[in-house]
Every structure is written in structure tokens, then in C-alpha cells.
Amino acid sequence: MILGSFPSLKSREMAYFYGHPQNRFWKVMSVLFEEDIPGTAEGRRAFLLRHRIAAWDVIAACRITGSADSSIRDVEANDLRPILEGAPIRQIFTNGKTADRLYRRYTLPVTGIPAVCLPSTSPANAAWSLDRLAEAWAVIRQESGEGKHGI
Image 1 (cartoon, rainbow, N blue to C red):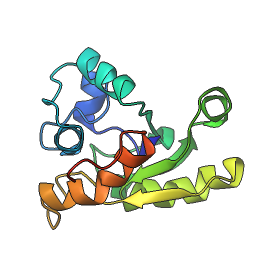
Image 2: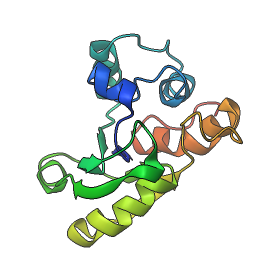
Image 3: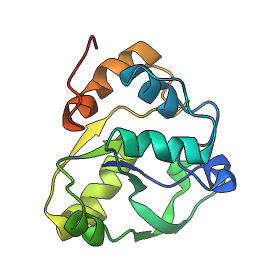
Image 4: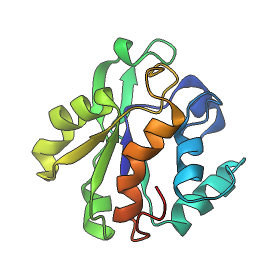
């Protein structure tokens, strides 16, 4: 399971994860699984299902200005227990330090399951190239049961 913090404005408009064209999440996924970047929400859902990856956000609702994680206030966390009880989740990953901090604060005390923090795919994390991100994110390929083929 990969958890972001809260969807960007563009993702909220698209009504699907990582909808901002500059976010590198789907580019990283396409590199890891050697597939074309899915262009639609349905294609993205199918991609995640095919690779046995769950995607969600730590936050269900909050006050936020635009897409800035730094402006997040009045957090209401998603309750992950129904997902964790109903699906064979083997590992939880957080997409970036904000998602990780929020997970540790709001969700870890409820689930008791530690998460692995991966570098953010946000365009704000410009210090990480696509290749570096793919290398760091390759661990999810192992957890999804597909191994680490050439990555």
C-alpha cells in the first residue's frame, strides 16, 4: 500500500491519485513495471490492480491552501483498518516525508504497522531525478511480488 498525504488540486479535479502532470508517481511506476504511463483514471486503476498495489492517502479531510502540504491544518485521517483487515497488505509505504510524518502521527498509533518512507514523487522534490526515484522505489516491486528485474 502506498500512501500520499492529501491529493493535489489537480488530483482532486481528476478524482484520482497523482493527477498533476508534473508529479512523477506514474512515471516512476511505469519505469518500475516496464509499462507505458496510463493516461486515464481507469487505466491507472487497472495498472495498480495488475501489480497488486493499493494507493490511498493518510488524510481523508483537512484545510489546505491549494496543493501545499505545508498548509495542511485540521487533519481528519483515513481509517485504514477496514482495508488492512480485508486485503492482504504486506507493507505500507509513504510517498514523501509529509505523508510519513502524518502517518506516524495519526495512523501508526491505530494500526501498529510501521511504514517505509520513500522519497516524494512531487515536483517540489526536484533534488531527486526520475532515475534516483525509480531506484529508491524499486522496493515496492519486490513487495508486490514481481521481484527486482533490472532495477
